[in-house]
Image (cartoon, rainbow, N blue to C red; front, top):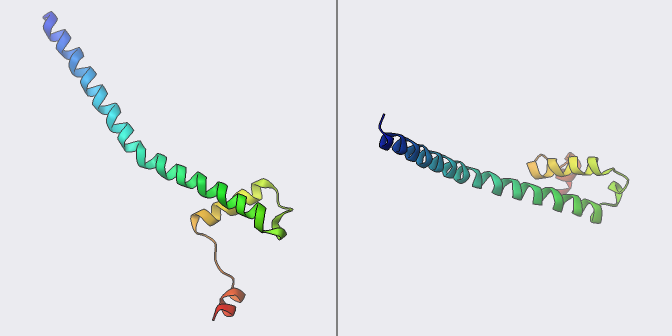
Length: 87
């Protein structure tokens, strides 16, 4: 194998590696945005619970975070009594 072929192979490997890494970084951008939004939602919800919900003051931090996860997932439902009052 000639020295030129060795240099070409290295050059192509570097180019392919660079393109691969760039494509991975581009694919990660939406995931990081979603994670940032998620973390902001959890923090704001726990902050709101601490400030506004007097009957949840005695809950520990993990329980409040668990409730915040449910809220951010959209898994919080209205009770039947609330629905009847709204009608």
